[in-house]
Image (cartoon, rainbow, N blue to C red; front, top):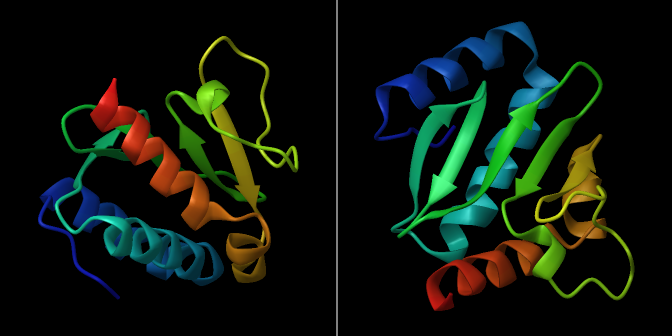
Amino acid sequence: MTSSNNEQVQSFLDDIIVSDPDKSDIIEKLRKVVFQTDSNINERMMYGGIMLSLERDFGGIFAYKNHVSFEFSFGASLDDPSNILEGGGKFRRHIKIHGLADIEAKKVASFVKQALELSINS
């Protein structure tokens, strides 16, 4: 398990590993994807999940009853030719992750990279 510099995030990670090990594995893999994209990303707890930012929020990881969701603050602006992103709001989009294989199959790393670039360049 990768530890967090944020006490609240670490507490959340410690709790979920006990309460739902499968979701914990998914969250850890998503965090790994995020920090492989840029090791300077900040994490904080907000809205019951882990918000991710550099200069501003670009996304977040949220655990729900039947899945983990990676939410993108400006997901409507991301390039998504395979229509993987879900949601119909003005800005936000998300990807539902039901298992570890979904992380690669749904191209999470590509979306994280796009979201980070969008966050920095706008």
